[in-house]
Length: 75
Image (tube, rainbow, N blue to C red; front, side):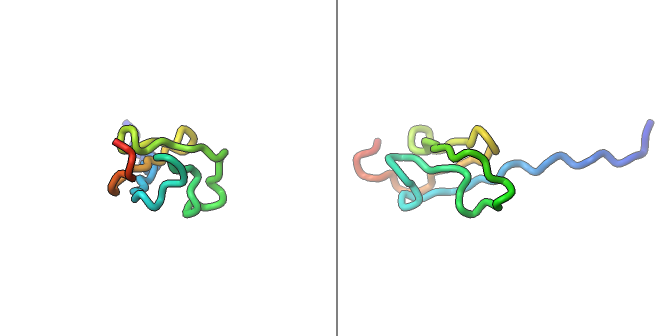
């Protein structure tokens, strides 16, 4: 049995909470977001956050959660 320490698993991707004013289109946001460090850039993708209340970036796994009031006209 080895007593060597195993490397730590990478941290889970961050969750970003969004209000209606943070949306950039009809119920969507984009990733990478402006707060992300330059080294972690990937192609820009638009993520629907109104349909289910959250969405996940297919590149980096960041979760975007809509926590605000739904904009008028959205169910």
